[in-house]
Length: 393
Image 1 (cartoon, one colour):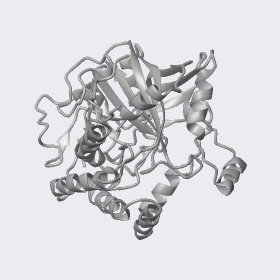
Image 2: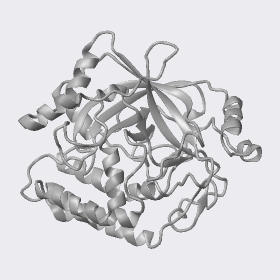
Image 3: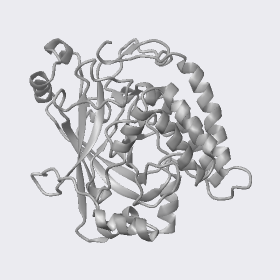
Image 4: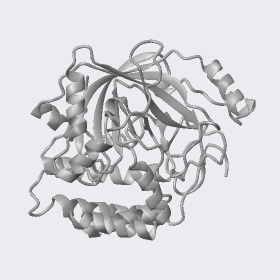
């Protein structure tokens, strides 16, 4: 395996076709025919809130970052000399307006006390530059991050068998039983999923988030966008993203991990009460006039082939390649509670394939996302009667 290189899976193109058919059937199964409820996303279904934010890209010292990489990773001076960090979204110091969507990770809307992952979808606006052909907007960069730093399925083939179990399950309550059967037959996947479900954050405004999948930093001059998924493709550099919560005041110290009370969760489970804790926390927290929440925007370089690109179940260890801060995401006081803002959050369309060409998503799961995301988004918005418009600040 070569550094900065993604590799195709066996029969990958066949599984693309299988997924296209399965996703269409899945959405129709959920929201077609007599199912009159408004169509939602097939995953990360429960929206907590749409929130305005600002992403500041720092005037960072590229030479100093390379020096740190030279000292803390196995990247050689020759390899580092060919890497350009200041490009795309990172090209120059700038403040970008942002929309955030906070959500749960599950396939259906569930109470927040139930085991789940949480996500923060980030839409950076007023972004200039050559775009990915799959982009559905003209001047935005989407980053989708989760509070688990890896994925639970190794290959596209495995994910297809998992999603087939989801489709066959139909609607709750059979849904969870069907998924459990698949997981029992795939114990490694089950363990990975359980590890992702362990977190019950105190607040999504002070939670850590990771991309869990990889992205290019630049493209080679002879790059052919038709080749990924067919032959091995090498990039100038490959990175992952993270958003680490820090205090709003200088020196912006990292905020320790905090979790919901176990007694509170136990009480809610016993009572069967409806739990929309995360939405209520965001509304209450941002209603305070002095509210301000910050995350350091960080990148992590693939430093060796043992930090895989295509297997997103393996966490890139920080001891082998540290996260490097290149910016800061900030959320301040605002009112996020209104029917109009709720609709806005539901109707926002996100995709890791919406953005600049130099930040191309790489790896098996990201390649699959290029197939799945457009089908879900177009079906959902059509069913909701929404003529989609690119959001602005």
